[in-house]
Image (cartoon, rainbow, N blue to C red; front, side):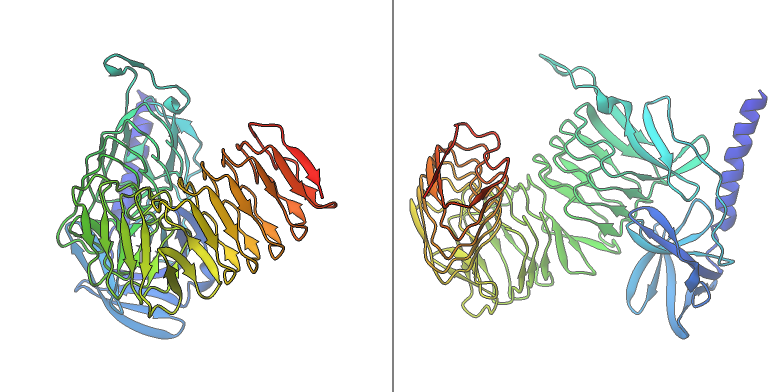
Length: 518
């Protein structure tokens, strides 16, 4: 009886502490940062970074001797402040301090400018099998579940040992603030996810590749969802995004092949939906498009300037995307494994990260506006003017022979990845560098000629080239790098005397490779 009473008192004190702190009015002094859900002290700025909130919705921000006016509001239970037109969420932390921003990145303040002392917490496991650890601010973070270590089992009717995951608002009266990165990654037993009100952060790939998840329920307290958090949750058909969500990392729902739509409040402060696509209002970035959306064509809205990393990943039914002349940036793998058949890139495009069209099996051609000062295309192949680099050869282009022009100095990462039609590659004099993975997985490639101007062939450049049986390196390439011919069927490698062959160059090769010196 006494033990139960003590537990009840502890829970009441914790709740009372939060309730007492949850008045935004008054002066708040800076004490540190939160980044990816972890607190880091930084009290040297506490005298110069100060917020003063009043009861009429006004605020003053003091920074390094300057003063900025602003306002604060409460909307649908979510408090946010506006300074210089920027809106950021305001959240009371478990220790009674104030966070301005999201659990992805934010500033933290206290009334007295001191970091509160927090009770020492120990790792543990709930009766439901959730694993938890202290988060460092008097709250807990969920790090996994005991079912992570147990294989999913099936019979003729499907999964026989399913698990429903409920992330609680508190454990033993102690608040839960976050789900740790990779906490449940790959757990095939999970069929549903429900996160209770009070949890603020879901880390990178926290529920990634949980292929049997059919439903996801997120709380309004959630401020940040990290990159790929719910990647490849293949049975989810719809996700309702919470009103308080401020920061969304790289497409958290990429490759969720049954996901047909998001739902979102029309007056959401930081996000919007336009014809199905999730867009960051503040940054003008298209974050995510549902993989199972019924549209075969999508026109990017006029106010979008950035196509986010993995934004259209896995959208197999999407054949056409129309980009306007304000798009300036395209993230890595933006259209990976999509159904694109062709695409035109505008003159405004200034930056393309790693191959945005990787494994687009139907993509036959990429055209780039002639006025573009950074990129150009020739016969449907993408090049960079600045680096003199071949960026991408379309996977759906059906020619069997291609000559890489001598004006090209660099063949980029993944440039020809898994291209299934080419049997012959001719590399002209002038090309200097072949980056790692440049020709990875070209299953029908049989012949490659490499000129003396090439000085490097990167690791895994010809990995999984299953029909490439013989190749000759010029003397200018001093090293055969690790993994260059991994998982392939190479029988003979011809190299110059003195060329170094790294251990693992033929990792998991299907044939014993004969090295011939010339």
